[in-house]
Length: 480
Image (cartoon, rainbow, N blue to C red; front, side, top):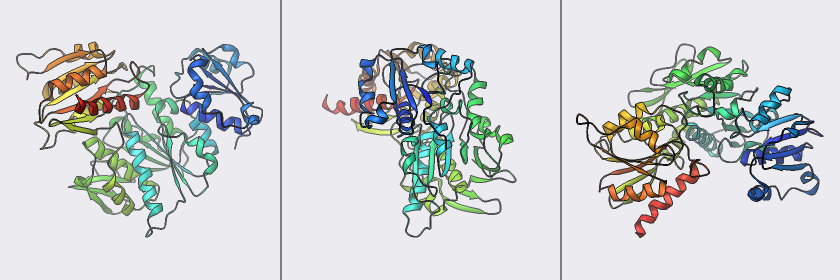
C-alpha cells in the first residue's frame, strides 16, 4: 500500500468522487488541495461533507475554488481529476506535460484493496449489471444452504458511494464490485481481477477526441490484467468481441451462442438462459422469468451471470436473485398509470442507441401496437441520430423534444412524408413543459416514454435529478 505521508495531491472536482478521495488521502497523511471551478460560496455543501474530520486531518486539506490556477502544480506529487473533469483541462494537460503522475479514486482504491475485485464497463447496461452482480453475491452470502467464498460484498465505483470511502472496512475474504466509466478508465494503469466489457458503441464523443480514443479507454480495463485474471465480453457486440485478442487470463462470453472453444459463459438455448463451463450446460432459468423489460436487459442479466460464474458464485443464487430483481431507478422505470396512460422514466438514456433499446422494449405482443409518446432531448453528445430517426418514423406517435438538442433532433428526424406513417413533432424549452404537453396529447392505452438521448446538464445536475423531476411532475398530474 502506498505511503501517503507528506505527499502533495491535487484533487480536481469537489463532487462525490473527489471528496471521498480527499477524505481518504487526508486521513492517510497526504497534504490535499481540493480544486473546483465553482466559487467558494457554491461549495458550502461540499465543504460540509468533510466537516466531521478531526482537526489534524482537516488541517491537511485545503481548498482552491473559482478556477484551475497553474500554480497549484508547484510541488505536486500527484494530480487526481474526478470523472467529470476532461483530460484536456489545461491544468491536467500541464501536469502531464511536466511529468506529474495522474491518477483517480478508482485507481487508488485498486492499489489498496485487500479483496477480489470485479469491474464492469460498457456503453450501456453498467449500473443494472453491477447492481445485479452485487445482488447475486449478497444472495449467496445470506443463503443458509450455501457455503460462500466471500464474507461481504461491496458495490460502488461510478454508482452509489465511492468504494474508496469503504476501504477501511474491507477484508481479504470480501468481494468488491465496481462500475467503471471510460472517464475513470482512461487514467488507470491497474486492472480488476474480473473485468467485464458489456458493449462498445458510440458514446461520450463530446468528451473523447474520437471513437478510437473512446475504445482505447474502455480496453484499459483488460490491458493490465494478469494470467490469473478473468475477462467477460459481450459476444454479440462487435466492439466488445473485438477485445478477445487481449484477454490475459480466463475468458468468458455472454450472448446468443454457446461460448467459443476454450471459453466459458452464458448463452440462450431455446427459452432458457444457460451456463457453459467448458464441458457441460446448466440451465439457469427461463428468459420469461426475467422481470426487466427489453432485450438489452436480457443481455445485462446474461452478463451478470457470466461475471458471477467467473467469481464462483452458485447457479442457485443467480436464479434466486434474477427472479426478484426489478431493476434500477431511471432505467425504463414504470412511474404511473394516469387516465389509462403508462408513464416510463428512462432518464439514464443519454445516447440515441439507448433510446432505440427503450423503444424496442415495447415490442412484445401486448405492447407493439400501443402508440408511444416519446420525450427526447437534453444536451447532445455529438452522436449520430439517424438510426433512431428511422425507428421514430416507424413506432412513435408523438415526438416531444426539449432542451438544447431539440432543434438538432428535429432536423435529424424530419417531418413526416406522404409515404410514411403520420407522427407529430413538438419542441419545448424544458422537460416540465414537455411533460405537460405529453399529458395533453396522450390517450388511454398510450405509452409516454422519457428516453432523452442527450445528457441532463443543460437543465439538471445529472440524469438522476432529471428522472426524479420527471417522476414528480408526472405524479403531480393527478392533482391537475
